[in-house]
Every structure is written in structure tokens, then in C-alpha cells.
Amino acid sequence: EVQLVESGGGLVQAGGSLRLSCSYRGFSFNDLALGWVRQAPGKEREGIVCFSWLWDTTFYADSVKGRFTVSTDNVKNMMYLQMNGLRPEDTARYYCVAGENRCRGEYFYLPMNHWGEGTLVTVPS
Image (cartoon, rainbow, N blue to C red):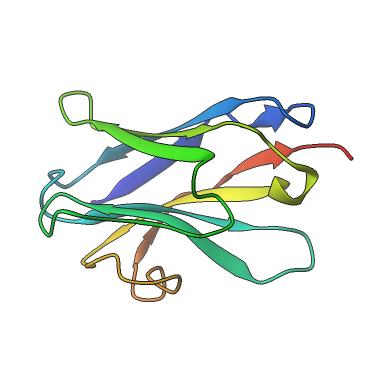
């Protein structure tokens, strides 16, 4: 059974940093793509990062490019999202997602069939 558990969310001032973690189990790192999707209150979901070892692809949404960095620890079955230069518009619930995916484009998450419960990030204005 695939399981994804996020952690690391919290309240951070604008300009600050946070590192989100996603612990995954039930699959190998090169079987499925991993990604992060966020949803702000009253807004649509936004696919911000997707990473595939199998296809050797990485996607970053323009809204986070240059500020957020994805990394993995394949021994610990972990994925991380280092978020720097946080802005109020980054306030959202962040979900770890996994699935068969080539990580092409902002809607990469649509066929992703494994989701975590999410972790909340709040950046006050």
C-alpha cells in the first residue's frame, strides 16, 4: 500500500524559509514520480514541483522557480521541498503526491493517484 506523510509546515515570516518533508512507503523511488501540489484557501490546486527518477525529469512551476528546491533521500524514502524567500502568496496546504508521471507541465498532478493529507504553510502579509 502506498502511503505519503508530509511534515514541516508552519508559520513563517515573509522572506523566511521552511523545509517540507514527505515520507513515502509502498513503492521504490524509481517506480513512481513524486511531486508537491499546493492549494490556497479559495483557490485551485497548483502543481509546483514534480520529480521523476525513471524519466530523469524535474518540473518547477514559474511561481516557485528559483526559490523552491526538491530533493530526495532514496535510502530513507524521503522527499524534501526547501522553500526560500517565502511570500504571503505561498500560503497554502502542501500535498505530497506520487504516481506514474513524466512530470510535464503544471497539471502533472491530475493523473497522480496517491496523495498525502497535506501540511499547512502560512506566510502572513
